[in-house]
Image (tube, rainbow, N blue to C red):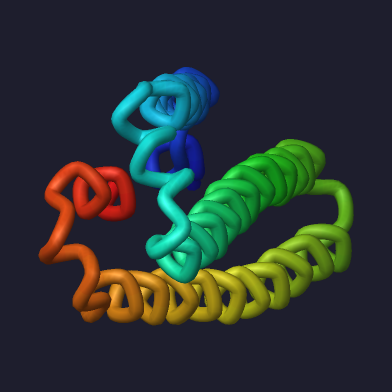
Length: 143
């Protein structure tokens, strides 16, 4: 059996994490722009600022969860590969497979929770009436 073809390689994970880091840099640059600061400091948009901050926290949580899942998946795959290479004890292989299946079920639940949170965030931000008043603010909150 070959597990390496169905799971992301270390290089793929590294590229993905580099993309997340680049996204963080763009968000930081966006936050420090004068137009963004002006839009965020405006008193009438306090609720939108709070929603944007909540959305940012939701995105950070989702990114953190994705990173943790990738790292744990990599660990489980390595454990499975080690057990298959040893071939000494079938109970060891069965134990690792059972552990991986349990892990996979937990991951599915975590992913469902993250997707639900992201969908709720998207629907809250998309339905805000003030976004139609200020295009720059809408762009900031949409990112």
